[in-house]
Amino acid sequence: MDQTNSLSVIAASPGEQTGTQRMHVRQFRAKPAQQAARHWVRGDMFATAFLNALSVVFPRGEAFMIEALRPWKDRADCQLAQDIATFITQEAAHSREHVGFNKAIIDAGYDIEALDRAIKQFVSFFSGCGEVTKLGATMCIEHLTAIVAAEILKNREHLEGTDLELRKLWLWHAVEEVEHKAVAFDVWMFATREWSGARRWLTRSALLLAVSLSFFINRTRGQVELLQQDGLSKPTAWWKCIRHGFAKGAIGRNVMGPWAEFLRPGFHPHQIDDSELLIRGENMLAAIKLVTEGSAGDAVRTTPTLSEKLAVNA
Image 1: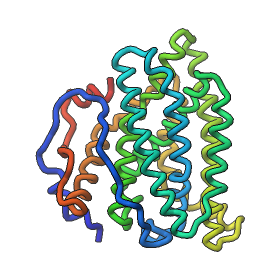
Image 2 (image 1 turned 60 degrees about the vertical axis):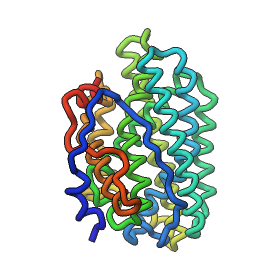
Image 3 (image 1 turned 90 degrees about the vertical axis):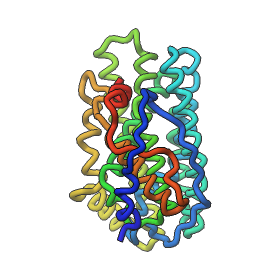
Image 4 (image 1 turned 180 degrees about the horizontal axis):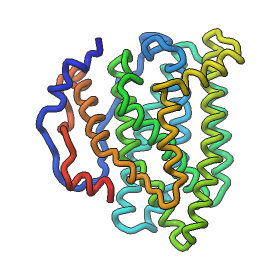
C-alpha cells in the first residue's frame, strides 16, 4: 500500500498561501540516494530505465540551460530578470541533486558512460551556436521536461512503489520544472522581439522537431543501454522500450498532446493551466515529508486562489 495514501487528507489541510509570486526556490537537500533495489521503480526495469536515463542527462543539461539564460539576466526587464534568477537557482539545485542520484545508479551496478557521452555531444553541438539558438534549444528542452514533469504529477502511479526519499526527489524536481516552464520561452520571445510572428513560429517549430528527435533517439538509446546491462538483447530492449513507453497510460503516449501544443501558432506555455497540478504536487511532497521528516515543511494548499491563477498565467 502506498505510504502517502493515508496522509492525503492531512497533506491537504488548510494552509493556503496568498500572493502573486510566480516561482519560489524550495530548500531541498536529498539524503544520499540509496536504491534499495536495482529496479527501484516498483521492480519495473523499463520504468526504472526511463527515469535513470533522464537523470543521467540532468547535470550537464541543466548546466547548459543555465548558461543559455544567464547572459539575458542583465538585459531583460525587472520581472523577467527575476524569473531568470529563480530559474538558474532552481536548475542549479536540480543538477546538484541528480549528481548524487546518478552516483546511486552507478552503485546499483550500471555503467552510464555511454549516456553521459551522448548528452555531452548534444551540449557541445549547441554550445557552439549563437545566443538565440542556444536559447531556442533551451526553450524546447524545457517544454519536453515540463510536459514529462506534469505527467508525473498528474498520474501518481508513475512513481508508486518507489522509496519515499527517491520519490521526494522526483516530485520536487517535477514541481519546479512545471513551475518555471515558461521562463526560457519568455526569454526567447524577448530575444526575438524584433522578429515577425511567422519567423518566430517557423523557427521554434523547427527547433522543437530537431530537439525532440534528438531527445527521443538519445533517451531511448540510453534506456536500451541500461536494459542491455540488465540482460536484454539490443533488439528486444528497443522493442520493449517503445512498447512500454507508448502503451496506454504510459508517459510517452500521454505527453503527445501537450507536446504538439507547442507547434500551434500563438502558443505560450501558460496556456496549459498547471496551477492546480502544482498544488497537487506540493501536497504530495508534504505528505511524504510528514512520513520521512515528521513535518510537512512548506505550507500546503488545497486549491489555488484567483490571484495565484492570474500570476501563474500572467
